[in-house]
Length: 94
Image (cartoon, rainbow, N blue to C red; front, side, top):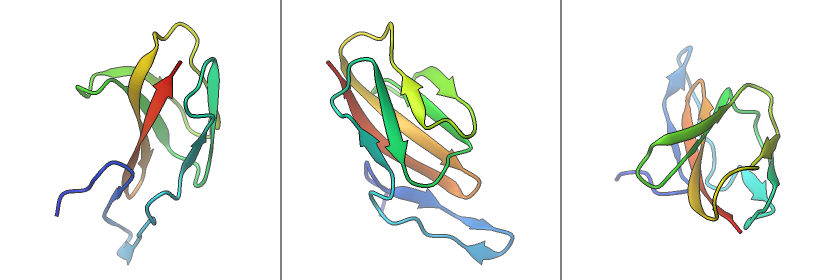
């Protein structure tokens, strides 16, 4: 089955299987205005995209506070990229 929003698309790293449970990542506040925080595993990279998949912003390793200044209101996707796969969450900006 194809992964759904909030699911983890995983693989293997160094021959050790890695499964991240759905909703391991929590973003807050959501909806947001000026910034969001996330809790969970630290992502290698975070991509903020529109619903067509166009990358709007990219944040580096170790970032847990994500500024949203200058972004118009609406819906976005946050892709949390790990060595073993990625997890996607929906974000709304007010």
